[in-house]
Image (cartoon, rainbow, N blue to C red; front, side, top):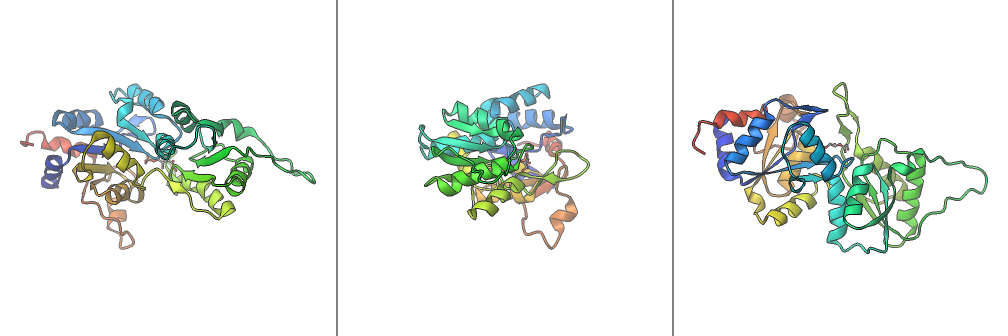
Length: 292
Ligand SMILES: O=C(CO)[C@H](O)[C@H](O)COP(=O)(O)O
């Protein structure tokens, strides 16, 4: 394995990483590994499908954990939603209905888009008395659906009306992750469950901006002016991280310290094979002495 990591370190210019913390705890060896990769001239960016925070809010989290990471190096799916709307010149006089948390609102605001919904709609209830009809804003031109701990029937109905009744209204998903790891005790329903509700009610498929879609990879290759073949995607999930790297034409490294175990990787039911795998991100440190 060491030989393979060495090859990787020689090849990759930019390393896209995701496995930095578990809950609010840094994974062992992460600060030293990041320092070592940077000292070898590797450019690092951090990509997450978690849309609950903006890049600025993630920046604060990195800071709290004692890591120096700039906003420019953070690519969250909250940002991807706003960047996608920018990339298609989404009209500034149209509005975005948000099913999700604060991070999406913050990024839309920064990008200069008008929005409604988000946490504010979390407490809203529907009273189904005879003749009740929910009004919706006809200026909504996009519905963005992300992970939302305050998901409710009001939001599903509101967003569904926008998608079904406003001509040309876009349906954008930050990710379709089946499960997420809100606690270390079990897996929890992920953003895919919120997106799935809208797929059911609208009979439409969303445009996904997070992993494993290629939008973020294209975006960052463009931003840093590098070839995707120079990028190595490092992650702990096969169906998001590794597929994201593969879909983007990058090298991929799976670390087994997160959600994927060796038996899952080697299961005959798994069709996603990374270029390399290793136990933990700090295995890179064993290469310290090597001439890279
Ligand atoms: O949105 C989510 C659930 O759908 C999670 O936050 C997401 O799965 C975490 O993603 P990553 O492993 O990329 O940080």
